[in-house]
Image (cartoon, rainbow, N blue to C red; front, side, top):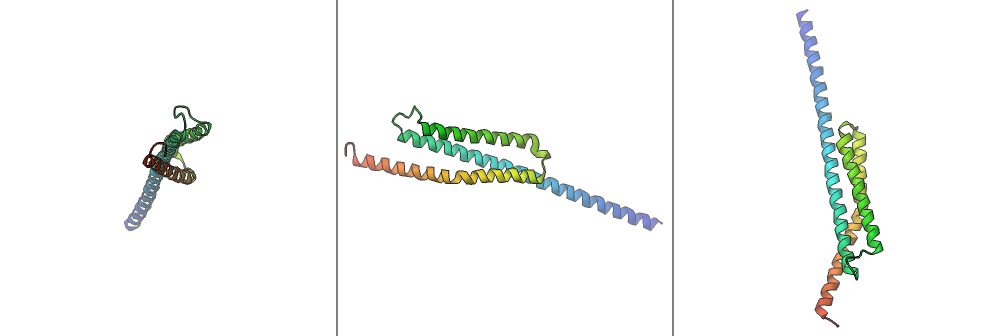
Length: 148
């Protein structure tokens, strides 16, 4: 009888340990997913700010009056600002809801941020190339001298 009771207690202990280990693993995975979301949000914010800075530089170089934004610059600035506002909404969701969110919700949010970064990548590359082209043109103009 005592052996059966000991075996039952051992079995129950094993079940509890396995359940605790699974719970800890889920918590660790959830924490990692939250950290991934925060890292993606930081990278996306950096991308948006880089776009904004690049657009400002490009428009100021090309504009006759850099203090007066052109219509295309206003549109670009509004698009970047809208992206930053959407990102703020994502950050608020992460703060307020992510701790209770399912793994699928966390992954969907992370994928949305990855997709947005993917759509921004060509713009960042184009801005970088445009900035290099502008810099080259300015150097050429300086080397030729005024009125050349």
